Length: 199
Image (cartoon, rainbow, N blue to C red):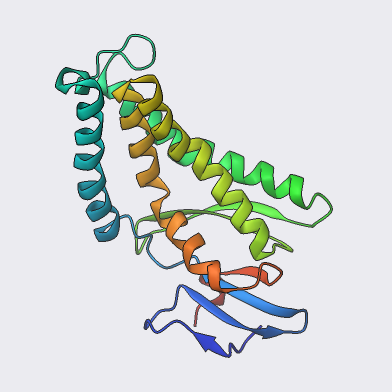
């Protein structure tokens, strides 16, 4: 699809919308830098103190130390695990969901590094609908971040909360994208705009 009837009000639109031969289409510009900068940092700075305050209010100040031998005995293990979970496991779950929700579709999974923005993105090429994108991302994000964060509060282990929060920071950009796609029909085709499509 060459022409879009509406774009976001940004100079380089992350999401463009229009109608093509197959109906409604939503184009996601995967070359745009991931928002793991200002918005992610601000979210982390706000969420972390709130999480620590709630946890200490429930379990006491001493509970904020990462000393649990059951899950993460040292802080560096929390960081390493959150990177693996927030990136690799997140991508794996998304890929599995895409295959399950539409097994007959001709699709290819790819990761692409954009040197200009130092951005690494995972995406799916093929007959992907917005509803599939939502399901895959929401499920992956819940498993990799939101459920561990909540579980840490339930079991009283702050290291699990740290793990969940750090994992969330790696896909905060994707969560933001899912939120921005809420205004579009779930049946609209979801396509990606990469280097070869950039003018």
